[in-house]
Amino acid sequence: MKKSISFLILFSLFVLPAPAAVKIGKPLKKAHEATCSIMTYDNEGHLLATGQGFFVGERGELLTAYELFAGATSAVTTDAAGTTRQVLKVKGASELYNVIRLSVETDKKQKVLSADSLALSVGERLYLLPVSTATKKDVGEWLTISHVEQVSEGYSYYTLSGAAATASLAGRPLLTDKGQLAAVLQPSAEGDTIFYALDARFGTGLEIKALTLNEPSYRNIIFPKSLPEDVEQAQVYLFVSGNQNDTPYYSEIVESFISQFPEESDGYIRRAALHIAKGDADHFALAEADQAKALELAENKDDIHYQISRQIIGALQADSTLHYKDWSLQRAAAEVEQAISINPLAIYWQQLGDIRLALNDGEGALEAYLSICQMADATPDNFYNAAIACEQLPDSYDRAIALMDSAVVKASPAGATPDAGLDYQSASYVLERALMKARHEKYRPAVADFNLYEKLSGTSINDRFYYLREQAEASARMFQQALDDIDLAISINPLAIYYLEKASLNIRVNRVDEAQPLLEALIANYPNDVDCNRLLGYCYAVKGDTRRARPLLERAVSLGDATAATLLERYCK
Image 1 (cartoon, one colour):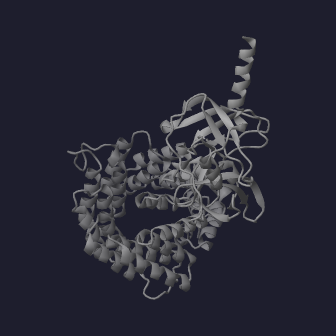
Image 2 (tube, rainbow, N blue to C red):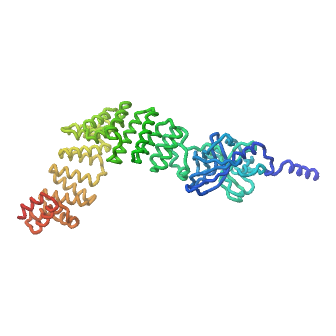
Image 3 (cartoon, rainbow, N blue to C red):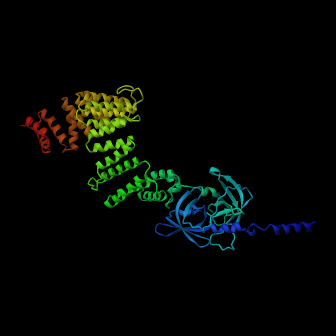
């Protein structure tokens, strides 16, 4: 019996060799051709890191370790046959799982691996392909699955065991004995016998989407990034990247968009804006060519006319002396009028109104703004803009106030009237209406609006409000209210101008004794202020102290104050 058992043990050792000695089939040998070495470089061409990866997909893509691309601006791969290819752009990345998908220069001879959906369990073995520089006689290692867990979106994360690692294995592929791509190895240290690997489908599924710009995985690498493959996602990506205050990067994104989507107008109109920012005639010419191309390709040509109008305005604002062909406010107006003729959107009318206002065409601006006010979705701001334009026209006060009333009511819930049923949302428009009334010397109605604003705003009142209301109250001869308000302004923010206003107001109501100490304190800090000199000189003069009044009034006269000259003549002969 002992001899029989010994024979069986010996036989089993013969027919079940150790994992490293398992015969490697043709699928695994062919899979080796899809591996590659990777070298990354910084922007000065210095070698940063080397590692291993493998080709996937049908369009020349590479999976490898994310960590290889920290600080890298360029990279090359060399496959098992010795062919070198340039790495082009990041197509997807996960810093958390240390995997990155990139595009590479491709050709028909390139061997690739395809990630399969596999149901692997504990005890099964996966084959770690040898490095890309290994000879055909070299074999890889078999690793045994000891634990399987699920990560996001149903992908598997494996714990494996095997022979001690001789170097980091990050980014290398694991395959089944049939040559099916199963996983990508995570970082390991020399001597490790426990390894971790991520489902390869997670890596091949990584992609840049419209809002990935702010994700750490993409912020933390500077390697060129691809655009989303879906045009709508790419358009959003283009928009978001334009708000990142990184012109070189944004320029690169715009060029990538044009290259990837040559029949879409967005790239050309955005590149036109970049040319205009250069500020010279040669770049203006390039911008015109891009504007024309965008107009040719655009389905919604009204938007392009609107964008051209905006770009011309931007160029004029950047250089008020600009003279380039017909680029002017008139041309900007003509472009937005073209947009309106195609699709009369409120935003186009708004721009036309703004341009006409800048051209001092009050009637034209009012017409544009009123066109918006007639729309069902008109906003309080639309009525406010119309009121401001209307105010500039002669004999238009009543109409301007009526438009401001509409802005006030529009901002509050349904059922509100210009003075009743309003809520805090109308407060800012009530304040603007008060200021408009004050500008037209309707001081008591203005004070009424200031009071209404205070009621609607609750506790969010600042010193400037009390100062503005005090000005209207003083002009309306509501002196006690004015004195109270200037004190409130000072209690919030003790500015010199408020103390000067308080002194002036006290003088107006014959309270010279109250004004004098205020002015004496002010002139100590502002000895050459014309108002301080005139007012304090007046205080001394009316009290018969011509010795102190004369030098103050004379200084005010020397500073160009005609009123001080009259006071000097009257009180200090």
